[in-house]
Length: 283
Ligand code: PAF
Image 1 (tube, protein in one colour):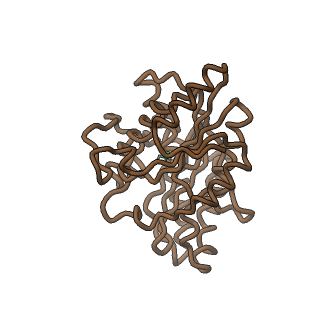
Image 2 (cartoon, rainbow, N blue to C red):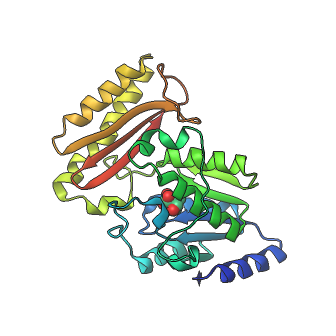
Image 3 (cartoon, protein in one colour):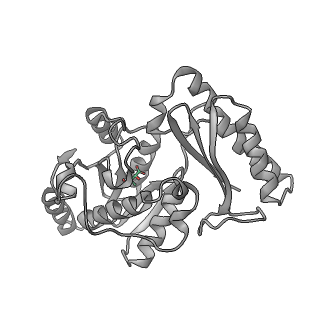
């Protein structure tokens, strides 16, 4: 596996692959990889001749006071996982390589101006998706992949990236991959490492609450209020859990819905101690 730290190294290598007629898949990550990322790389390796994964903790998607500094990092371990899953090249740039103005700042952003980035996580993280779109757009411009792979756990991010790709005519196929869970149902996340043992047990409440939403919907419940109230009540049984939001939205537009049905996304964000977790299911 090639380790590239500069944009020009990536461009030169991808150009070479293109000359050989090979297809290229991109898996953008912030590192500290787990089986969820592994499944994205595995899928990309199945679909494409060459896979580029980026490992970059992107400062423009963190607000001051968020966990940019404490975001977990272990590049050596990341490389082992990537290589095992069939990654051909890992792009691991410095902050200055990606943001040449220094200090992770930029004057040019990609921003979706409708309400999609304002819903769900956007309520407490107002500039988060502007930072995500900007870095993902830059990665698309650097790698010029045929396909790019994102996890369905970040359902709002996935919907926003699909919209960005459509609106800016990127011509890249966006592939969403299913949530990978621990045996007890907790969605795999790089941030799970921060959970203390009692918090780790409490975190299963997120999955339990989503199962209730699925059961209610399959029993014919149509009221989004009834479903989201039941989800919230289940999480709130857990004293260590503090609900940030429980929402029922359209899975493409992220617009809140009054009636749940096929294609409704039930999305939740919960703080367990210092750790913010998100999870979701599509009914
Ligand atoms: O989902 C993530 O890990 C990040 O938001 C992404 C897509 C790699 C952009 O920094």
